[in-house]
Every structure is written in C-alpha cells, then in structure tokens.
Image (cartoon, rainbow, N blue to C red; front, side, top):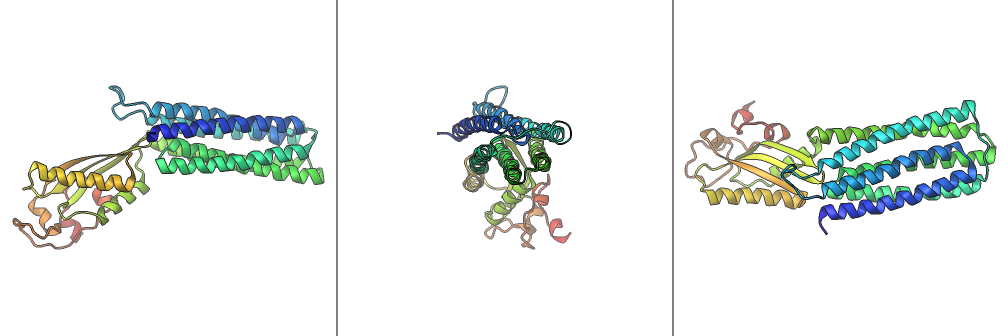
Length: 333
C-alpha cells in the first residue's frame, strides 16, 4: 500500500471510531440530562464533521498529479487542518454559552449520573488512545491532517476528563454549579489547542519556513557532506501534505563532467531520502566552484587549487539559505 493509501485507510478507521463515540455520548446525555455532557456531545459533533473533512482531504491528497496540480494535491491537508482548527474555536463558543446558560439562567436537573459517568469515561479512554495513534501516524508519515485530528481528539479527552471529574463531585456533593465551571475551564484548553492547529495549517498554506525541519536537514547535510560539495546554498523546503520538496544549489568542482556531477547530485538526494524518508523530493542545481571557494574547500586531491584551506565552514540555516556561494568572508566575519 502506498503512503497516501495508508494515510487514507487510517483516517477511515478514525472516522468510524469518532462516529461510534459520538452516539455513545448522545446516550450518556439522554441518561443524565447534564449540560456538561450535552456540551461535550455538541463539541464532539465538530470532531465527527472534522473527521470526514480530513478523510476527504486525504482522498484528494492521494490523487496523482495532473496538469493543474504539478506538485500534487497535498495542500488540501492544510485546508482541512485549518477547517478543523476553526471548528475547535467555534466549539469553545458553544461550550461557554451552554455553561453560562446553565449556571445563571436555566439550571438542569440531573438523572442517572452513575450511568453517564461510566459511558463518558469510556469514550475518554478510547478517544485518547485513538488520538495518540493518529498523532504518531501523522508524525511518522508527515501528515498534518492526522496530527491535527489526533490533537483535537486528545484535547476533547481533557475536556471529557474534566466533565467526568465534575460529574463525580456532583454525584457525591449535589453541587450543580460545578458542572458549568468545569466546562468553562476546559473550553480554554480546547481554544488553545484549536489556535495551535489553525496556526500550523495557515503556516503550511502560506509556505512558511519550518525552522525545526530546516535545522534538522542542514545539520544532517553538514555532518555527512562529501568533500566534493564545496557548499550548499539557496536551500528551500516546501510541504505539500506528506511530501517534502527540497530545492538547493550545490557547488561542486568546476572541472567535473556531466556524469560526475550527476553522481554527486544523486548521492546528495539518496542520502537525504534515507534520513528523511521516501516522501522527500529533491531538486538540485549544480554550480561550478570559483577561486573564492578554495579557502573553504575540503577536497584534498584537487590539482587546480589556487589557495590552501583556511577553514571548513560549518553549514547553518543562515548560510545555507543564502543565494550565493560560500566564501572565505564567512570565516573572517
């Protein structure tokens, strides 16, 4: 099964799980008439809707490239995550409204709290486990949609745990106002999680640089560079769903023929894919070295060297991202 097919299959399972949990929450609300459980159920409606939106986005991202989408359809995953983040924020508004309404205006009478506690607690356990596996699968396959879904499910679990705690306290103390207070507290938790998901998705849509990923890539290339690579510059990384596109310029000896240059590029591409996965696409433009490269060149058997090695420049995000060849000025400044 392809990577895209694997992601799609996993999201289908998540959609089934969230739908089943949604119906269990409805049953718990019917038993108890608790506004906290009603709020949890309404909020979980967002989870179900978002799950099917994510499923559709992964279906789109799994489609092959075409003339209108030469880089594939992976951006659909960012749009899906953005929708999910917005829905999480909207759900907070619903929770706050219901909690305040129950606390100040229309307090509810509770029934069969023991049954409700057991059912809601069970959904919390299943939901958290499903969210954990969604985040792990998303990070493993570099799929923002699965990571967003998993974080949403786990944030739901935190709210559900608070609701269960409130229900347990109410069961023994009969203090009904705790129901609303717990809901308000965890509305803040869900809002923060929704904001983070929304922020990440917008960053992906806008092709914002992933600083952590850039650091990892540059550090790896610096640690494993070959002596024929004078430098790597103009490095760019763009995410299209689970696919990473890396573009860069590599400075190699000017006297290499086409086959020798191709061998160096292939070694760079293979090394990167081995470390960051087969879902990496790398496009490398080769530049011939200039005399200014000699003081930083670590190639020992160069017959045309015009200057002795002064210092090996350590590659960093700053100098690898520049649009010019590295030179001795980087050593002296």
